[in-house]
Amino acid sequence: MDSKSFIRAKTEARKLCIVTCYDYTFARLLSKTAIDAILVGDSAGMVIHGHSSTLGMNVELMRLHTEAVARGAPQHFIIADMPFLSFRKGVSAALDSAHTLMIAGAHAVKLEGVDGHEDAIQRLSQSGIPVMGHLGLQPQSIRGYGGYKVQGRTGEQARDILRQAVTLETLGAFAVMLECIPAGLASEITSTLHIPTIGIGAGPDCDGQVLVLQDLLGLNIDFQPKFARPFFDGARGVLAALAQFDQAVKAGTFPSSDESYS
Ligand code: KIV
Image (cartoon, rainbow, N blue to C red):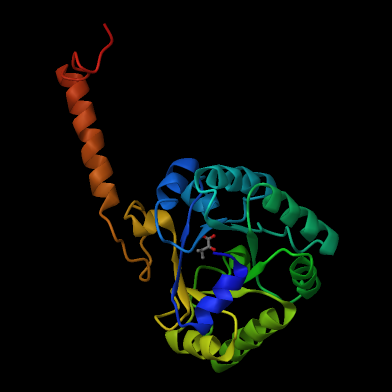
């Protein structure tokens, strides 16, 4: 898979499936799947580092996560998130940030929004760095929204998100992620654009879907957004294994002689 195949998938009406990943162990598992792309999301700030937002992520942290994922899944198409403000300080700073992520093993970058950094998006695309846009709920703008809220519910907001999506396509983006917008709006954007839309909380009509790995594995015990269907009861399985280990150690049944060296 590459950015051109993304666009081909849309023309062939083939749905695209993306999962986030931040570390080597899960990347190894993802490398055994048919999943189309791995997103090294800045959601690492919340899922891995335990922050309440993605704002604490920076290029150096994203570089480390991207390198670990690239080592684990070297054949997969890897998209790395450009962290908070890393594409808002001018074209040259955006190129430097993207350069770091591409050298770390990314094949494309994702960045939120479009207004005010059109030049950076265009220059990245023209420099051979495939860019995925990200519209609707943009977690890096959470302080501006005053919370994680569905976007695009008013006619004016909806028109604005559609306008931004068209602008992204014009600037050379190869795909656009749509987060937490009404399904009808996502459907309209999907039928307007020639590049694929990837939804998360944006209904079934997007050209593809993405989920945070820990959500889809049912590992997130603190928060489960409506759109994040758990495909596995991961937390229950992990907790059961930990309880069994604890009991075995305390009962003196672990390790056995087979698990010990002579
Ligand atoms: O950082 C991330 O995980 C994202 C999600 C919306 C998939 O961008």
